[in-house]
Image 1 (cartoon, rainbow, N blue to C red):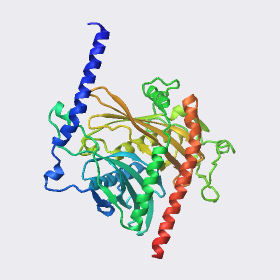
Image 2: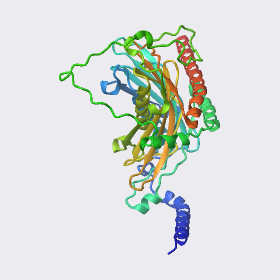
Image 3: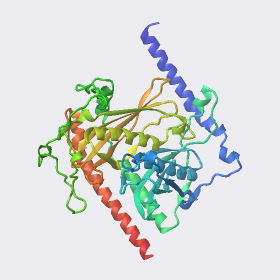
Amino acid sequence: MPSFINSAYEQIRSLWIRTILFITHPIFQRLLPDPYTKAGNVRVDTKPAHASRITMTEIISPDQCDLKGFAYAGTILSWIDIAAGIAAKRHAVSPSVTRSVDDVAFLHPVKVGDIVSIQASVNKSWKTSMEVGVKVEAESPITNERFFVAHAYLTFVALSPRPTAKTHVGRVLSEYQPIRVPELIPTSSMEINRFEMAEKRRQARFGQKKVDYQELRNRMREWSQGLRTMADEIAPIKEHPSYSVVEHASPDMQNTQEEGSEEEDTIVVHKLERRFSQDPRMVQQIKEKLMDATFAEVVELVMPQHANTLSITFGGQIMAWMELCARVSANRLAKAYLLTASIDSLNFIASSGVGDVVTIRSVVSRSFNSSMEVYVSVEAENLSTGETKFTNDGFFTITAVDQENIPVVIPRIIPQTKAEVALYEGGHDRRLKRLHQRQELITLVRNSSKASTKS
């Protein structure tokens, strides 16, 4: 049979199947049982805001921290996602999945032994989605000092609950679909304020123009396949000190730093004198580095413990893997201790599930005096079908510090290709936005503290 006939046959067959599914889907949705109502409960049209409130308490353990004992931002982000997911599910009484995460700024690092409190509640609900606000605070077990860590806004979508299908046809016909959630009713003045601000943030999300980094993602995919024009050199064999003695010449510290060689910070949030590390061990051996030399790739297999009850990968788990990859890229530019300062807003375009292979790729998109912006892209591959899909991307801001938490001057990043230059130049505006939002958050926290003190 000629190829064009086969192609026409497949198109007609595909169109026929989609037509049947389009007609039968609503019927099967109504016929499938609802576990909540089957248990004797009644679904309601409205719910008070406080009904979704949840508080999680965690203690930072050593396995959740870096070399300096600071908790990984990915760990905090995963807890934020879990707490927000519980609040969303409590309001919708249905499985709920992460749709997007707004910018998250970390105002203070959390150390080993600190007690972390994560408070979450639904701020507002729409037809099938909800915005969940999360506040993270920490407490030192030694001094009992409490301090603010981070604040986040996440959007969740409620999916129709149903039993797991046992056949392929059943799985196709019972595909999870968004369902209507109860209307949220705010009562207190704070709940009303959150309710009103949630709508403004939603409109801002809709109005935000999404920049397409497909060209850069294609380039990073080529790098991961060994198609880089400047491939890494083979690592040398390091002699063991018990077999050979190597003389180490002390570096000439007078020639390691040229004044004015670094890009100047354009924004100073607090008008204080900026101090950088004087630790000789933190002096960077290079002045600049090509952007593609910071490329990093992390590949993970989604296991059941990484997914929710729908076998969809936790958004917090994806963010934790993204931070891991971002830190690898950051370490390829700066040889210092690293602290994640913020993460830009994330939109989950597609989801991954149990059995999928998740590939995270990152590259340092721009460097400043002591901080760097890292672009991270995520794609998922279904090993059964061979389908590969882009799931989400985002920017992490990572700061280089020494043993005393003093900023370390880092090398400059040098873009080469057109896509790299576009990514690099956009970093200035993204940084201005982050600093502005960070200052707004600081002002909000301080005003809230003053209001609570007066009351």
